[in-house]
Amino acid sequence: MYQIRPYQPGEEPQLRELFYNTIRNVNLGDYSAEQCAAWAPTRFDINAWTRRMAQSEPFVAVHNEQIVGFADVQADGYIDYFFCHQDYQGKGVGKALMQHLLKMGRRYGVKRFYANVSITAKPFFLRSGFNIVTEQQVEIHGVTLTNFVMEKRVS
Image (cartoon, rainbow, N blue to C red; front, side):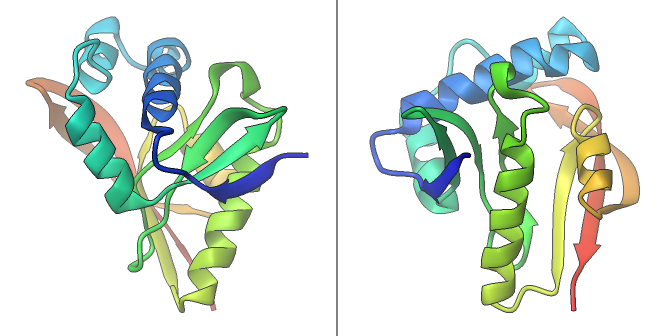
């Protein structure tokens, strides 16, 4: 249903827009407008974002030639980005991305996947077999947000 592939250089603006719109529309259900604005500010450094995407090398989920989600997994099992398009929530994008991340991680010998998970994404990560390690308060641009360190161990 969804094609999962490595992101391609030049797609950074689309990924930033998806990131921004997801936080500003979906996460707004669990975080205040001030928290969402700190997490996904309107003004941002496109060069810094482009560097972060190049470093994290995310995978994108594509449907009808539109990017509908993106996620990454690092060599140590850390999942930094995991975002699904606001119009594709609950439609299997996250599941497809998670299956791909776990498969790629196992291919490289990852035994423990972990992430800093938003209140919004916590139920999805729990359904995906992750456990809560701890609840934490993080500061972004002077604003405090709650999230959860979650992990999944695989054999």
